[in-house]
Length: 156
Image 1 (cartoon, rainbow, N blue to C red):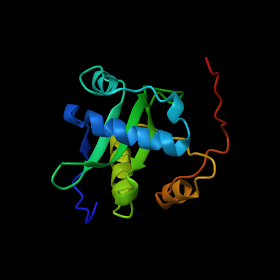
Image 2: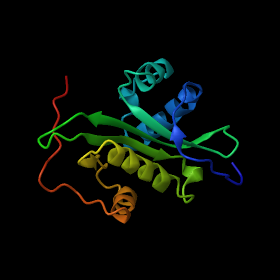
Image 3: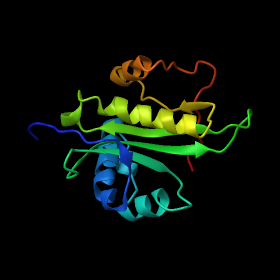
C-alpha cells in the first residue's frame, strides 16, 4: 500500500458500501465468524442510511478518498434503567497496513463524541477473548471490563 495518508473520520456514505463490507468481512475473518457472515452491500445501505437507520457507521478514508482504512459501527439502545441511551460499539476495525496511524483512536473518539451528544450513560462493547491488543487499546482510553455482567446468548 506504500505511504498512507489518512483522511478525517466521517459518516458512512452509500458509495462506501462495498469497502465498508470489505472491512466488516475482515473483522469477521479475524474474529472467526466469517462462515456465518451474511451482510450485503444492500443491507448496509438499507439499514445504515436514511431516517430509520438501524446502525450508524463512521469510516476513515485515505486522504484522497479512494480507500477506507478503518470503520466503527454503532447502534443505540434507546434507554435502560436510568432513562438514558447506551451507545453500543458493535465493530471497530482498521486495515492491518493502516494500523499505527491512530485511526482506531480517532474512530473510538468519534463514537464517544456520539455518545456524549446523545447524552448516553455509557458506551459498551465486547472484546474477543485473548485479544490483548484490543484490551490495551481500550484501557488506553480509560475503559475497563464489566465485572458484573456476563454476555449470554440464545442461538436460534
